[in-house]
Length: 293
Image 1: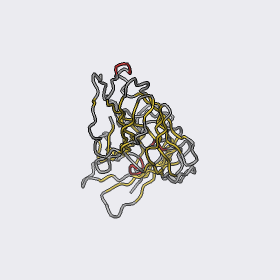
Image 2: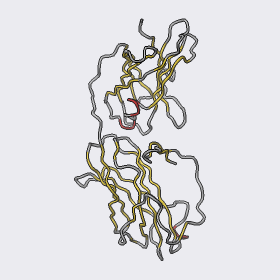
Image 3: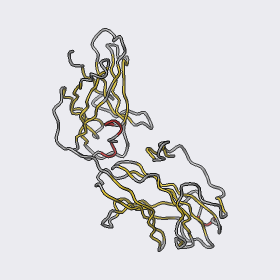
Image 4: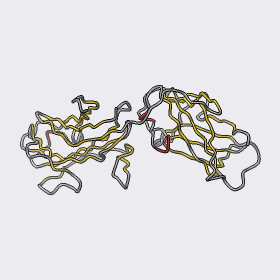
């Protein structure tokens, strides 16, 4: 299952909820669903015809999730239920390749002429993609069909550490190191706290982890909090490169009356699908004291 944005239809995350058995596919010559682009009449090989496709996005950043949908129809004696999906750069090099089985739970031997089956391919773009124009291509048998273009805008990257108010140097599960934290004044919101986290990626990540920033009192109770993807949802961890420095700012709205005692920040990373936090030392968060004043 893919989680999509309601305004753009773009896939932002993928989750596996379970499986099902396909006992009988659709058939007939009904129209394609809205938003699908009809394939060329020649898009048939090994008695498998591509009827139409849909791309969920035309622009993306490295590490983003993309979804490619296709509708297929079987002719007599269909010889394959597999295809290869490629993302190809302007120089013709495939930067991403995925082999897909159409309706894996519906054996090819049971396919009948006229059967219509759907493939939904959800994949994550490589974190090291350069900015530029890429093309989705779909290959099976002797067919090589261009599905449409994808413009990739890579972020500006830095590999030079920046100064911080409080050094931390805590590594979460050998994936990312929190180098330190600084604090930015927020005159527009006097009852707020704006911590700036500085991360260093240690390895490429296949999970888009969320950051939690909790302000806690002396008893460990949460006073204010903010959770989200780094850099205001603009730099998912799946787009980080090893050694890259990522500056990640949050704003915590404070209550009118703060509890007595010294307040502290608890910081960490977690998997949004499972809620599991990444370990760091003997805990699953780091805690720092707020600066005086």
